[in-house]
Image (tube, rainbow, N blue to C red; front, side, top):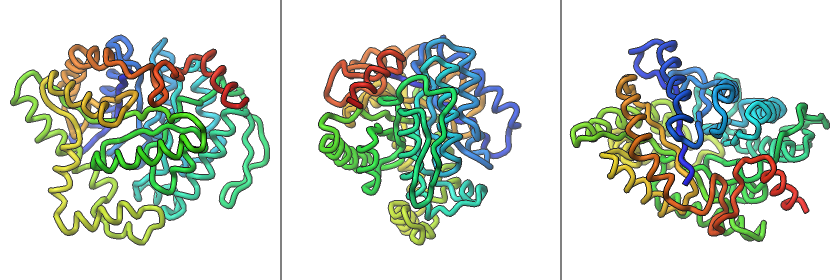
Amino acid sequence: MHTGLTLLFQNLDGVRSDEEVVRDELSLAERAEGAGFDSVWTPEHHFTGYGMTPMVPQFLSWLAGRTSSIKLGTMVSVLPWQDPVRTAESFCVLDHLSQGRAVMGVGRGLGRVEFDGFRLEMGESRDLFREYSEAIVQALESGVMEYDGDFYRQPSVPLRPKPYASFRGRTFASAVSPESIDLMAQLGIGVMVIAQKPWDKVEEELRSFRARFREINGHEAPKPVICVFVGAARTRAGADRMRQVYLQRYAESTVEHYEFDNVGFAKIPGYEYYAGLSRNIEKHGVEGFCNFLADLQVWGTPDEVVERLLGYVERLDAGGVLLAPSFGGMPPEVARANFELLAEEVLPRLQAHDVGGDLGVLHGAPGAAATGDRAEATALAAGAQS
């Protein structure tokens, strides 16, 4: 099973300098390929210490020059925050620099502080995401960016350098709402599950997505990728500290950054789920939700971590997992120890779990994977277009 590494570049609570945080995260990135991880992923964030990752393709291009085989993914590129031409160009360049190792994760964004910083209306994000994602996916297949929509109008321009290979089978969206199911299915985009919702809710959304994907495309959807924060320790005391200190602080920082307790979500079109979430938090308290969010993640001894991760994989019939080892104000020595224990005792056992292929494996179709290899990706694209 494909097993990747997620790096957040978090600097919470002002304990360390930005320079120190960036240096330590870069050191983990440089070790990822040698440690055996299949990919490295980073989310896009702006303006706060929640994630100091404003230029993810730039970071991944830096990493491409220091590696030879590891895949390079965005978790995610937030499409409403940038011009679609620039987004498509950045992935073209990254793919050439890495010789076809780029993986495109996309989303529409949730942080109000980030929308405000870009002078954008959150209420327009759903429409912007729909049009931008259509334009970008089509451009990365054709090599030409053109679109005539209600929000986005782009005269025909070529992408140069031309796309290195098809992105079919290596494009994922961070969430699938009822409103976006048709769009994701039409575009052939897979699902990236970031552990922030009840698992039964995720299962329900995946069932709807898979059914619609099958109806539109005549074949099964790619298996989803699960993104989870993981704390491993050899002792019970160490494992409990991962949960009570670092996962709890991660959960608190997530509520703070996304304002999950802000009932104002009810007034923003496209954020109805979060409006209901904020009402529940108002009724039951922030602490209860933080505990719930922390408990969705994974911690324990290596055996416990493997068992729980594989349980999530089986439950969602996932094709891969992405592990975040540094979060919640974790000191660098703790993060390094966590990284090393995951690499030594968890990673090999996850990779030995057979899900039928590499990243992008088709749901229920062993061997029908899109791996990012140039020849295979091009062949898959040609078959999809014929």
